[in-house]
Length: 89
Image (cartoon, rainbow, N blue to C red; front, side, top):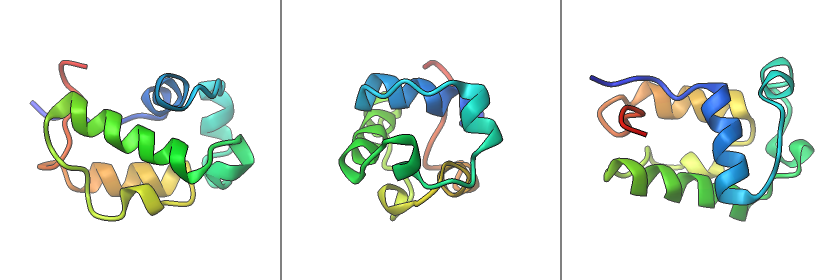
């Protein structure tokens, strides 16, 4: 079974992979702001991509680490359901 990555899970990944605490409700209400406005830089996003790849044993969609906003990131990774699964996390 394949599940979609949620904003709550993304907020958790921002904490575990990049050391950045973001309230999931804040992330949801401002999902169109840039990652930089949340304090997440490109290396932090690369860490999130790496964490997801390690967790699921599959590559993330091409250019996932170049997404500018949480909404864009979720749209990309959730579009390619064969590449990422959030079950068993």
